[in-house]
Image (tube, rainbow, N blue to C red; front, top):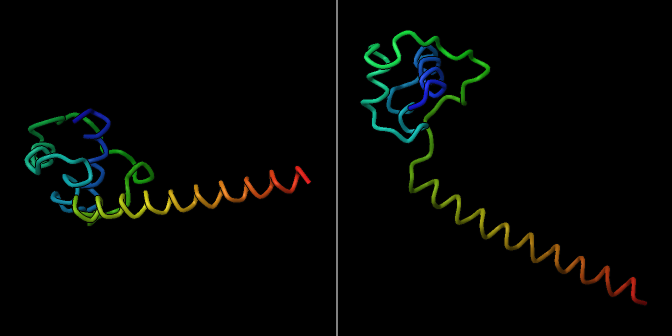
Length: 96
């Protein structure tokens, strides 16, 4: 983890977030957050201010995040098809 990430993790710990949720946010093993919590890693870094923290967890599982990405890709395809149709009809109207 970078120093900036460690500061955010410290802020999340101070806010009362679960170590498991913090690890999920950063995509790291929970041991890395435990190392920060105990001062084994980054002992002299301050906590990030509350306004710099992500929303509290719990966060999506990898499976749920993947399903959301598939749904978003399908939605993007639908939007792009609709925009293409609108542009096509506008071009036909201009040609008249």
